[in-house]
Image (cartoon, rainbow, N blue to C red; front, side):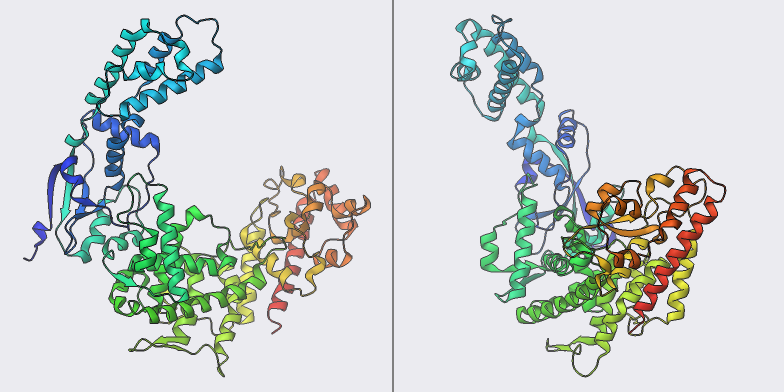
Length: 613
């Protein structure tokens, strides 16, 4: 039967008891984000009989149950209350009443520590009472009487009072919320599965915004892929398992039929899981850009990277990634998928190795200056290389033109750093990043094949530098830190840096000397002209001193390092610091001239070294 626009859904009221037997929770559902307090507030709302938002369900073909598409947090909180009512019912008064009964005859002998212990034990016993069905009338009294600590305070005189309190608690439990009778407003979508993601998105407007990747997952739940034991298939499967093990730790309602052992045995995942796992593995291959990301914040990032990469491979507009579903037949070929993944990771590894030589920070650890990257900017490097040097045949073969006599692949790689700098100083890759990304693989109107003309490169940096000089600052901007990092890495003699030592970004003219006046005198003290790397151990002792003061105090600093850092001569920096200290009328002109001159020298040398090849 065809469904018209007017009847693509039904709106029904089910009791919780009716609905819980019909509902299964698909694996695409997001992890819970409600706090304990939010859950308690929701249950309190239900106990008062107040209305709440509907849940969305959908019946996939050949399923005996319906899938819960939206409303997981509400539904799972009700389930949690059913299983653990003791965590929601307020028993503060009952605890206080029992403490009063037990300690009535010991007012002067019980210290604060003992009282606190009594309170915790009573709370535990009452929660056990609430969670246990059909308890005997003397359950509370008998349990306290047999308790190692509480028994010393219990006697038969208290029996009637304790029984009364138990009755109050059980009555409160019975009257607080009849969970099976809760009325749940339920919307069941009857339209085609291809429309489900849009429905899902519309229902969540005004609430916690869903990413388009989470929305697609609702639509692709049934697009399954069977993996094999080849390396990259295995890695994908393990990332999916790791993801659900992590999510299960945060759920009160477990993911339907999830079993690591079963997944490893059957090796069946779905399309959305593949895209997520692909993104996660790309992130691992790209530490230059993503080594600073914390594990619990990788879900959305992995989705964006994985889905967009799959869109690039199949030439799908980044704004229309739902089209990836059309290529499910290709991806169901496990041998092809393994070959595809192998080539994807090879390209991302090349990209990472290229940027590593320019963005690595002088440190004992693997740390990079990567704050000027955006996800779409990062993906554009892959898009350009993949689109021009790889293709997929009708019989699922991957043609790789990245090696051989044609050196354009390696030349393109070499050009990335130029465009990385150029885009950073020009402020490209802003809000329309997905549109810009499309130009590298949809219409291919942009590419990185040709190195930017030196004049264009120099002019763009000059405009950025002029703008920085007109803005007062004390904090280092990310572009200045990125440019200084590249400047140091372009010097093959290590610039006098000591291998195996940690270095910090540091002001030449100490921060404390100008932090109170930089706005008044419009001083750009947070720019590359006042920025250098300094050994962390020296930096901790530097404080307001300049390096010549430290050398005089016995600190060993390499002359080569001071020269490469373009550190000012001793008389110059002493003079500048004296002008600042005395608040001299010429301090603005002379300090700005110093910052401008040194910044230009660093930038000119950086551009010269970049264009040497």
